[in-house]
Image 1 (cartoon, rainbow, N blue to C red):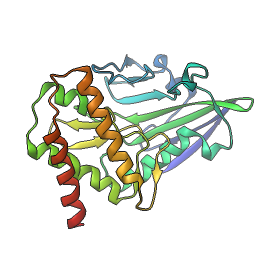
Image 2 (cartoon, rainbow, N blue to C red):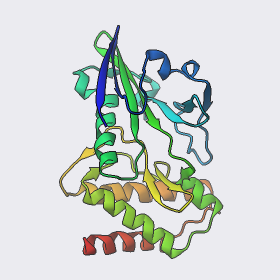
Image 3 (cartoon, rainbow, N blue to C red):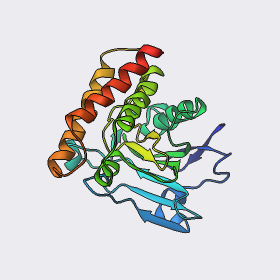
Length: 243
């Protein structure tokens, strides 16, 4: 991967010429592509309505507009304080994904990122290469009763990210994805980073557990039980011992 920065009238675009050889602000809108469809999902897996599939062929890329969550997000939807180009959320996530993709980790390849300034604030967008045939863990367990081997593999896959020092700031059952072969992928690395081993590893596991419990509350028929979580932890611990 080779990053290129293109200046715009109100900010900049960071992109990989090997993926998108020509970039413009229009590419960060639905109208800038031949195909565009809003990402939707069951059990709240569709996010905040800020993500869509785009491309000159169906589902070629994923375009995400950065939006705030929580209580603050009800007041300030998508603006952030500008403290430098390299510290914008889109540029930071693009570069983290670049590092992880170069290590052959199961993350989307970053294609382009941009920020647009307005005074002391900015908005941001990110384009990544669409991973074929993946669905969220929340959707996967809603349609399939997974065996111990699957949950063990989820734990082992999470350990691989932790072993590489990948701190995912929002590791939940929506950002953990499963492909058609049952392999685990990770999405949405906003506010994530590389860290030395620490308490954050247990904290991210706890966050995933809470997410799965909330999904079970939304639909008690979901295929998730205490034994499944214990098997996930077993896969995690087994991987850490063999590292």
